[in-house]
Length: 68
Image 1 (cartoon, helix red, strand yellow):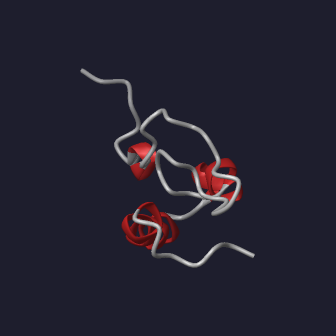
Image 2 (image 1 turned 30 degrees about the vertical axis):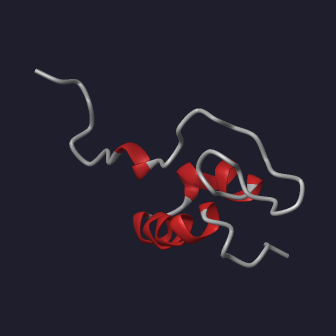
């Protein structure tokens, strides 16, 4: 039997353990998130995380605008 909380959703993390922030785009070259998004990831709601995750493919393909 597992001791994990049944409501735990593993935070839907896109992390691939390649944590390097690109100087020009300001996105992580591994997951596509900004430093702010990475640091606040566990504080976001599931909907907020899904919204960010929907943007990651475009960010990783270099077609996304840079964060302000």
